[in-house]
Amino acid sequence: MKYLDLDPIARVAGSVKMPGSKSISNRVLLLAALSRGQTLVRDLLDADDTRVMIEALQRLGVDIAYVDSGVEIRGVASFPVKDADLALGNAGTAYRPLTAALALAGGEYRLSGVPRMHERPIGDLVDALREIGARIEYSGKEGFPPLVVHAGGIRAGEKVRVRGDVSSQYVSALLMALPMTGAETAVEVEGELISKPYVEITLNLMRRFGVEVERDGWKTFTVPAARYSSPGEIRVEGDASSASYFLAAGAIGGGPVRVEGVGRGSIQGDIRFAEVLERMGASVAMGENWIEASAGGGGLKPIDADLNHIPDAAMTAAVAALFAQGSSTIRNIGSWRVKETDRIAAMASELRKLGAAIEEGADWIRVTPPAKLRPAVIDTYDDHRMAMAFSLAALGGVRVRINDPQCVGKTFPEYFDALARISRRA
Image 1 (tube, one colour):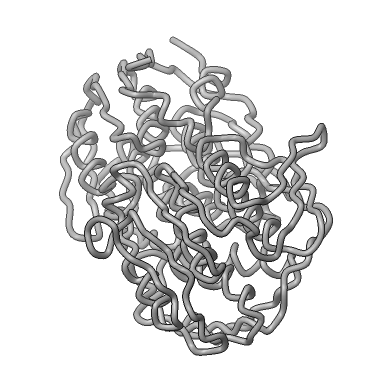
Image 2: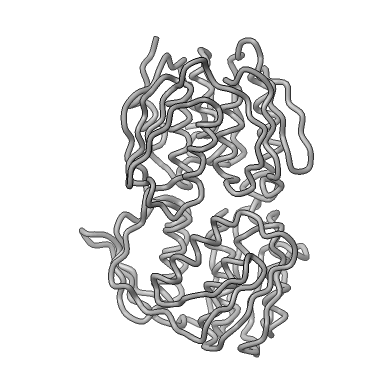
């Protein structure tokens, strides 16, 4: 399907069960592979990015089986396959952690991805790994994938320094890989660590697999001399980033809309998108395993907010700003520049098609909604979040064409079906 036409949506109401969190799913897959024992993973996300990780782990010798109750992973502690070619698509949650783990695995590995992955920087992670003896070469442009990883003389126990102001995935990748050395290691973050809630997810899951990392603020992390051990069974909670689209739909289109599978007990930072909606005037309720949003009285109010802690859900906020009564500014989102596409540039371009006045800077975007939205053909840049976020524009009484709708397969293959189920036409 080259495009999908969304007719105007008059209102939304209903409930949607969230697919498993991508961030949790790919971390759990790697940690289970590096653990002693067998792990049963329930509610694992079944989408492009997790399939990429599963295929890579299987190529590395990890036994992964689909069973009625979930996915079974037999841990290997260290990868038995010592020579492999891995094609990792555009899955940053697979590429960055596997780079770190394979640098410590004592083999020869070639890691590639789609063209956009080869434009996403990885130099800070490679520099950190080289600092402790890893041998990694760039087979294309310096500082970017694809990579060739050689068996290196890792100096276990040495302090590792890594920049934290480009991507939190570099820090998460190092933290997850370092228990492979068997030595206590300090990770020192240089600069301001962005997207801190994603590192919190990493620490939480490492703890579930038996490795308790100590942290001194957000500057120093101490990884103990401990190996991973399976918790036996682990359940992946619903994806809070994906929940943001439905919660925003409820706030814009009346609601109530309830998302199930993620709630007050979540370890994901993106549940704080609910706070953004409340600031905009929406009515939000939350239980242990659900969140519900509906329109408040008087329409949505504009916001001026630092959303560094929820960069994915911040895209949803930018589209929701089309429905606010005034200009909204979203700040401290420089990480958008190195995601699946340059999301600041892409958002600016597509929001303008709908009639919005847009200003943008290196790490911010300001959205001034038009008096009336214009019908538009939305380009998605092979970015799942562009497709899902801009589907909300159909709540503005206009037809919206989404080009390349299949790109949502990265994290939520059934997204448009789920949206249709809660949509009411005029």
